[in-house]
Length: 511
Image (cartoon, rainbow, N blue to C red):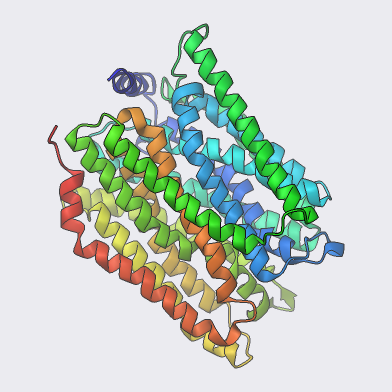
């Protein structure tokens, strides 16, 4: 109750102290928009070239891995970022406060990119681990801060705000994939990683200079820094984080030098079981022992449904940086007026569509909300999954040309990314908004962490799936793309069928 009262107090304080607006939204949204934009520049820019660097020859600055190993490690890396979001949400809620967590997480991320920029194998993987730790603290914190800018009773406006915030993500992603992608493919992989770190630092400077627009949102949870319980928790947390980092680093080192005979594919498989199990156990523990009211329990149950259905979406969507990235490099005709377009640039198509379509959908949700015909959360989720599936259906036809030994036009991938982008806009910003709306106040950042666990589970599955969608399985590409279509679109249809029941749980007021 104390945490809930404090959260409401912070919301009130924020509304009082941030009278300026930005496109009809709290001025603090601009601070978060540009901070997230530059962090996503670094993240997506690095992601655009990661698989290429993993499969490239050691003599060219790469790691010399097979496609399956590279895809599995890619999935582990992206998934690890979201797994640590759960711990990062806890640290943000209980130790640092959201504003301080943004600064600490951002500094760690920049350090990771600069470590990857060093031309050594050990620094390559160590840098990836550092980025995982920093992003795990950064990501749930940013989304929680956006939610604190809006009161509970502005559902359509909140959705619109998250859509604008999501556009900032994709502005950064678009620029990052272009610049980092060009540097990585044409100058050197390590130059691309260094650029990602530089722009992360620019985002932190912007946040520091304009954070006063956030008011009291995300203030430290402990006003008395001499509080012995606070000091004890902080020290224990630091010990756990250091121990975990050492253990993971040791595991990576043993695998790389051959002391531990386990492939990236096998590690990713076991890891997916762990991620799914931890997520399920966390929800069960909160539902049974979290001291929730009946209404809160029902809403947490809805969040759990959202998390596991969203995992299906990300398992397909995150093929962009792995199997579809290699597909673009090997099977797509990228010659434009005698110049070969970098393969990583095709990833920016998704960001371009989100940038151009996000304001359209934000306006649409507001207009439909004003008429009280705004589609419900499960309906938007269902539509997002169906559109993702249709994107893979396009690849079913495109891959038939590849099987015949032909290169395809980039327009096939452009149409796929268009469908994936519209699906993403129906699911991801709405999911972020819904978690902040349904989560009990004392579990706000932690529940946001569970939302990112959906990304974690989906990403590690995507890494495993990617090894089967490309590589030596060229003749089976059409069939395997078809299976992805059936699974993702099928889950979307189930959500549409059960939308009414999910809405009843979401809107429960029973205490």
